Length: 165
Image (cartoon, rainbow, N blue to C red; front, side, top):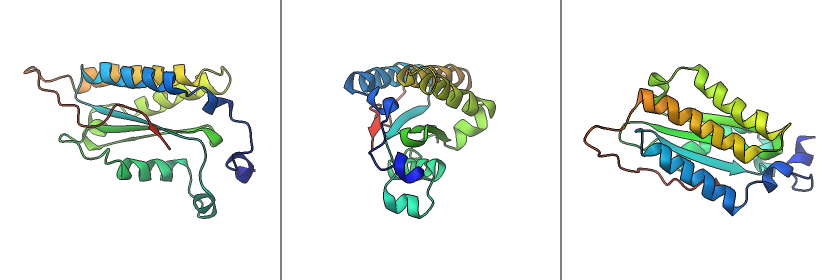
């Protein structure tokens, strides 16, 4: 049934929630958080995988790794890039984090952030709220692990606008 979910013919109520206003809210939350820590967060939303990807057996994790590379989320001075990837056709959430973030944050944080999104999206129909909760959770952890530099220098190395694929 993966072909049906990824065909574009199946109804996708999760995707409908992500309008321009939702993207504005997510962008603002990322920007506000990044002012308080040295991490760089990106959110990517993909409705479905293409037929080529499905035929090759590409899943959400592999696709998230591709996006992490293609959008150069790994390319920050301190290796602090984080990608939150949501594949709505599969209701799949993947988080990819660069080296320093993985070293400094507890391993459990990634599962907790994913659960914020899946718990809000699937049964509750509030996927945007789930993404915002995940961003807030990561922001709080990053404030402790990678606080903003005392000299106030904190360049925004990655665009805060969500990626619409």
